Length: 428
Image (cartoon, rainbow, N blue to C red; front, side):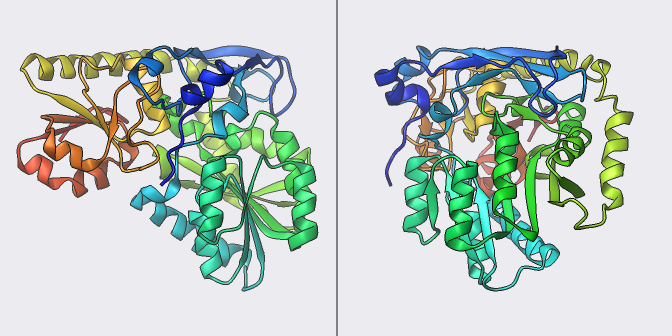
C-alpha cells in the first residue's frame, strides 16, 4: 500500500510549514464577539506524521486556543491552518478500526430506514475517506458518490469501486455532481463539519445538490460531552468547531434548512448525529429541544460553563504523570496504543514523550513506519509489541479502549498493564 506522509513531513520540506490565518468573526453567526474559553499547549497539526524523528521534532507548533462567541455561544478555534496542508496528505482511514466499521454499518442501516432510501437513490458523502460508509449504501443498492481531499485515500477508494472525487466540496462541484448523477436523497458528513472553516459555503453546496425531500446528516463530537467528560484531546487544528445543537439550529435556519432531529451517540466519547431537511419538510422531534435544554443547564451558552474545564484537565494530567513516573521509576517499559489525531493533543498537554513511551502501536498501515507529530515516536504494527515487549501500554485511542484491551488479551495474560487516560484514569 502506498504510504502517505503527513503535512509537516516530506511535503513541508518542499513548501515550508503550512500557512495559518487568524479568524476574527464567528463561523456560525458572523459576530465579532469572540472571547477566550480554553487554552491548550501549542502543537503541530495532529496528523502531521513524518518520515523521521528529526523531522518531527523540528515541526512548527500552532496555537490551540478555544474561543466562545458571545452572540450565539458557538465554541471554535480562530487559528486556521491551511486545509490543503492538513487534508491532501491525510493518513487516517475509517476501515482500520473494526469498532468504527461496525458503527458506520449501523449508521447506514438507520439512515436507509429513516430517510426511506431505496435501490437507485443517490447518496453523497462529504469527506468520504476510504469509502467504508458508502460501501454499505452501495451494497444496499444505492448509487454513491464520495468527495474527499486526501489524494491517495480518494484514489484507493475509487480503486475499490467507491466512486470518489478528489477535492474539497464546493457549490460548483455540488451542482456538477447533481447534474451528472441526479440530486442526492441523502448527503452525509461524518466527523467532517468540525473541520471546515467556511461552513456556510459547504451548507450552500449541500442545498444545491439535495433533493426536495432529501436530508443532510452530519455527525460531530458533542461539546456537552467534551466538556462534561473532559475530552480535551478532541481539540486539535483539524477540529475548528466544537458543536452543540442550539447554535446549529439558528445557523441552518438562516440557510432555509431545519434541524428536525438529533441523536446523541457514543462515538468518539460522545457525539451528535444532526439530521437536517429543507424548511418545513419534516416535523421537529422533541430530541432537538431536549439537547438545547441540556446545553443551557450546563451553562455552555455562557462563559462560566468553561470555567472549571482547565482545572480538571490540569488535575488529570498531574494524575497521569504521577502514575507513569511510578511505572517507569520501577524500571518498567512503556509504549502507546493507537495513533489517532487526538493523541497529539493529549501527548503535548500531558508531556508524554520518549521518557515514558518508546513507540506507538497502530493498526493502520497508513501510519506504520512514520513518526508521531512533534514528538517523533515511531509508529509500528502490532507484531512489534510481541518482539519488543513493553510492560505497560498507554491507550492513546482511549475511545476504543474496550476492543483494544479485548483484542490484546495476551498482553495482560503475560502481566502487561493498560493505562487508559480518558475519560478518567484507569489501570487495567
